[in-house]
Image (cartoon, rainbow, N blue to C red; front, side, top):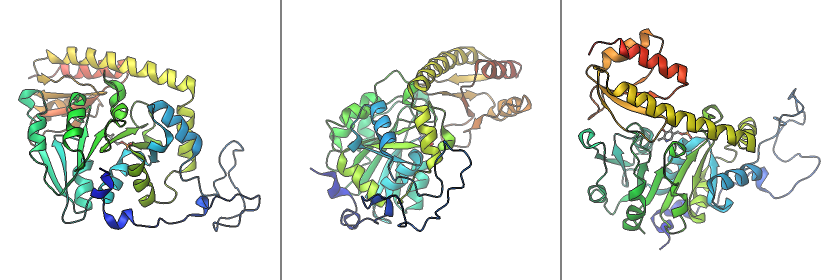
Length: 355
Ligand SMILES: *Cc1c(COP(=O)(O)O)cnc(C)c1O
């Protein structure tokens, strides 16, 4: 069954805005988009910034599709995964009526995006005492006729938990009812294949990938939505006409050149090694109660006194993320993996901390 039957019918029927860049015509003298005719960009190698950018630059689409091993028709590029999350909510959820499902704790933008759009938000609480493991039956028990999206962040931010072993069964259980959105912002740091390979088997599976984390391009805002053509097309038609700034597209293309990808691979290997080293070093400090395993480039830690640990780190000029006010995450801090020297500084700062 086509999952478009679960999308907002008025959007499926919508005739999208026809931007000048989509007319299909090109000419030397372009007087079609109310742009200024002078390119004031100083650097000859850079883009002509007086012109609107390509809505979905073909070369970038090809490079990203090759990186993620999917066909270009199944990939839409937006301003980070954050924009894809927002557009999926708008594409599927009738405001004031439909609901979406996620885990708690998990990435905060699912709840915020849902609230902004007035979609109902439901979360399955994960238990820190059970290593944040997921019971798929309990998750499915929260699904009803108005559930349109199920967000599965894997590896999960902030717990670091990998849920990929559940994706196939969850997508099957949700077939024809809800879109399973797997947020793979940190998959490069995990020892698991991407869920992109499962899209072949599931019409209701979408995967979010980003250049913000492993590829070090958070400032460029380039993320991808990967899914069946009908879902990608629906998101593309409700997206703003020119979502991708030309300088960001150039930065992304540079990051996807072979030499840059080799460097990225080396950095991922280094960070994964550092993650395990940092976890081992912190786990047996008296101030640390739990150091959960992580498949991301961060660690979630429970301290005897998180406020004290936070301030101790700050006194050493190190800023981490305090999650201790979130339900179930009392006394928890999330520490991103830095350079070996930065991680040493974390260990040194916390080694001095009294429990
Ligand atoms: C950082 C993060 C994102 C945001 O990615 P962008 O592509 O920068 O928008 C999405 N999901 C999760 C789980 C993240 O941690």
